[in-house]
Image 1 (cartoon, helix red, strand yellow):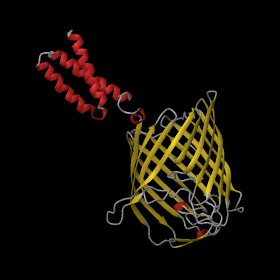
Image 2 (cartoon, helix red, strand yellow):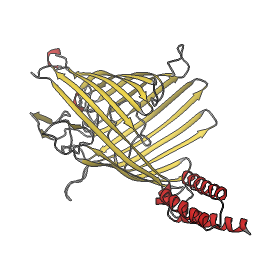
Image 3 (tube, helix red, strand yellow):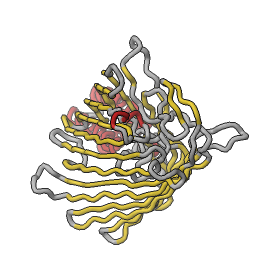
Length: 424
């Protein structure tokens, strides 16, 4: 009889912890008080009380880890919180400008990703920044002004089959456009619109993939056609022993850009003129860009510290612009650990880029390379070192100059960056 009473008490305590999961540990403390009163009344012995307390704690802990607390919706239990904080010091100097610039900068991001059910995932993220699509940095200036917070992404992703997913809203581009270099796209840009990703394994060594999307660039008056981008990409990845390779062809068709001046332009495409910080004029050409990308890797090096070495590159051409100002290409090398997460991990990446004036709209390229302008060539390198789990130091160098037959008009620029970044 006493055993049945003990079992009944245990069930009641577990039900209480499950009904109030948001305060489950406070509930455990209340349960302990109840158990002690039962001991005082003589219903339980000290040994039985200890066993019951232990069982209650273990039950709640296990169910919290496994996401099986009955009162919370499953999609709430599956929420993932992630983010990062980056502190940066930056020095830059451009020939032809009298003074150099030294800046302290901060970027902070946080996001929530939740798998609503087995087919739908949603995400919301915020970041510091000023509204520039290519940067979340806040510069230390203006007498300790409060920093702006912006929506970084907000999306819904639908996955009807394991090899298909569709996204809509403002989303992270990496899963929907493969870009081995930073030649055309700044890594901070999160596109707006809809996109499709297909990926299917063929056997154990070959993967085929495809990407397509329609992106809204701007919304203008009712009488004016809105600038937009339609793109498609198809490729294949192969892994054979220690070798891996990935190749893709991509086209970008920009619509209704000619005769317009886009927001966040670097004012370097044909038809645009920069006077100080004021950009005037309108785009002289449309952009119908196509090309290819490749990355070749090897994962077993002659030295154990080299976990992987890879060469990568891009080549693109804008068929709507004249020769000599319509091509873009880049080649790079990286080696070290594939991911830098722990103490002692490291990776180096170096890249040379050649981006002619009308090869791509100048609202997209890497903002660290001559403020994101086109008509630029140069090289850059980045060394990432793991200081602790999810803590890295980054040292970066950019050297870029204008593409010009007259060397006196190249105006080379050098940028040095040192970062400490923490991810959580």
